[in-house]
Image 1: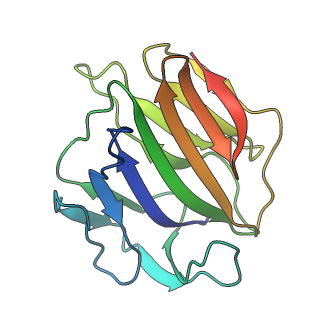
Image 2: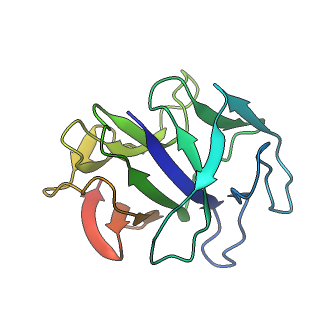
Length: 171
C-alpha cells in the first residue's frame, strides 16, 4: 500500500515544545532540521512528491510503497514522560493492509515501544507504551484525504488525535 507523510516531528518535552527530530520533506535526501541534526537514512528509495490539494499548507510529501520503504534515524529518541508526535498522512486509493505512521522499534531492552498506525480497516490505533497491548479507534479514515495525527503521552496514557478529535485513549 502507498502511504504519504509530510512533516514528522517528535517533541519529547511538551513544556518547551522542542523538536528532537523534525523532517521537512522539501527534498531528498531527507534531513533532520532540529538542533540535534540526526542522520536520516532513506531505506527503499523513499521519494518526494507533490502533496496536492490540502488544508495544511503542505506542498511536498514523502511517498512510501507501504512495504519496504521507510525513513530511519541514527539515534533513538527516548519517549518517556510527556511527549508528542505529529504527522500528516494520506493513504492513496490502492492502500491496503496495516500501515505504520510511527514505530519506535521493539527490542528486548525497549519494552515500552510506541507504534502508531492504521489497521487493515484503515482504523487508527496505538500499540505499546507502558500499558502494552493495543487500542483501536472506532472509525476509519478515508483514502485520498489528508489527516493530521497527533499522539501524545500524558498522565492518563497515550492519546491519539485525528484532525484535533481524540480517537484513542491507550493505557
